[in-house]
Structure formats: structure tokens, C-alpha cells
Amino acid sequence: MAAKSPARKAAAKEPPPSTPTATAFLTRLKSNASETERVKYDRYFPPAARRDGDRFIGVRMGTVFELAKAFVEMPPAQIETLLESDIHEARAGAVSIMAKQYGVKNQTAERRTELYDLYLRRHDRINDWDLVDLGAWHVVGVHLRDRPRDVLYELARSTDPWERRTAILATFAFVRNGELDDTFALAEMLLYDPHELVQKAAGWALRVTGGNRGRLTAFLDRHAARMPRPMLRNAIEKLPPEERRHYLALKPAA
Picture 1 (cartoon, rainbow, N blue to C red):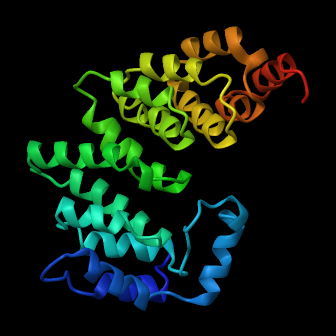
Picture 2 (tube, one colour):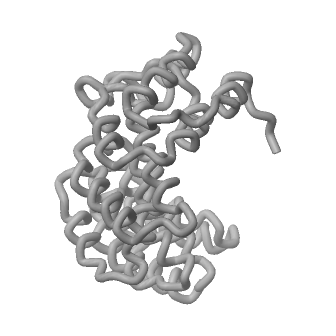
């Protein structure tokens, strides 16, 4: 296992706050910021592609996650306040807290529902790929494992690409239980999605169904020729080389 960075070690050693508020989280977050780390984020989140007002202060995500552990008891109202921040790492911390809090052993059903509702109600602040990836599976998907899943189909029809990404990534929670129907149905809905990061997410979701090779290859036989290439490449990544070549050959070069 890789050793923790000094900043992450320091964050891990800090005791949990007596009052886990958004303000206290932001104070600790800012104390771990560095200009060197801020510049590194530009590679993964080009400034030209960011939403207006979104900014990074330069805190490693490992440190953000350590802080989220310390603030895992933050009340949902304070998590929502943290989501309002224009600091990207703060919103990442908010979604990480939601996911960790949802998974706390013996967590109440009422709190889990509150966290699920908060994720969907404030999806306007869960507005980039990494934020979706932190909560779509562990909050939305897990919550819907034994509930109706109509909301995922509503999200898949959204004009917001991050809501569409949530829809497909939430199904990871179902695939782990051997339930594949929603993954294939939503992937089919997203076949013509214009956003590359939604296409890739759909491909990842298809890839993890590979434990049932027959269903995956049947889907590919029907749709590979018209799937966006990022979706196709991710969907076939774990297939044998000859099968990958076969499906790629069905897709005309862009």
C-alpha cells in the first residue's frame, strides 16, 4: 500500500471536530492548500472547461478524503452549506462526507434518505465528473438497490451531463448484486449521448457487467457499430484481444 503524503498524514492525525460544521471544514481545508497542488489540478480540470465560479485552492484529494472521515458526522444542513462553496475541494469533501455517512454501520434509514434526497436536490452543485463519481454509486445507487429506480431514467433524460453520469454510475451498486437490467437499459438510452464523460461512464458500467459475458456481447453485437468510440473502448476493455478487435472493426473510424 502506498504511503500517505505528509499533508494527508497530518490531516489524518487531526482529531474530529467537536462541532462538524461547514465553516470548520473549510478552515482545515484551507490550511492544507498549496499553490503547487493547485497548478496540478489544471491538467485534470482545464480552467476553460470549468463552470463559472469553480476554483481549486490546491488540496490533494487524499487529504480531502481524510478530512471527510473526520467530519463524517456533519449534519446534512451543514453538508449542503459546504456544497454551496465555490471551492471545488470543498464540494468534493461534501460529497465524500455524504458517501461515508451513508455507509456508516447502523446508520438510520431516515438519515440515509435525507442524504439521498440532498444529493438529488442539490445536483446543481455536484457539477463535475469527480463529484458525481464520489456519490452516484455510494449514495444514489445503494439507496435504490431495494427501491423503484424510475429516477435514474429521469436523470438519463436530463439536459445536464452530470445528472446523466449519475444515472449510469449509480447502477454499479446493482451490478455488484448481479442485477444488470438497469445498466443495459440506461446504456442503451445513452448510446447517442454527446458528452464524452457520459460516454466513458456508460462504457465503464457496461464493462463491469462482463461477469455475464453473454449479455455483454449480445449488447455489443446489437449496438457496437453505433456506440460512441469512448463508450465502446471502455466497454470492451476486459474482453480478449480478438474480441476487442472485432467490435472496434464494427465501428467506423471518426
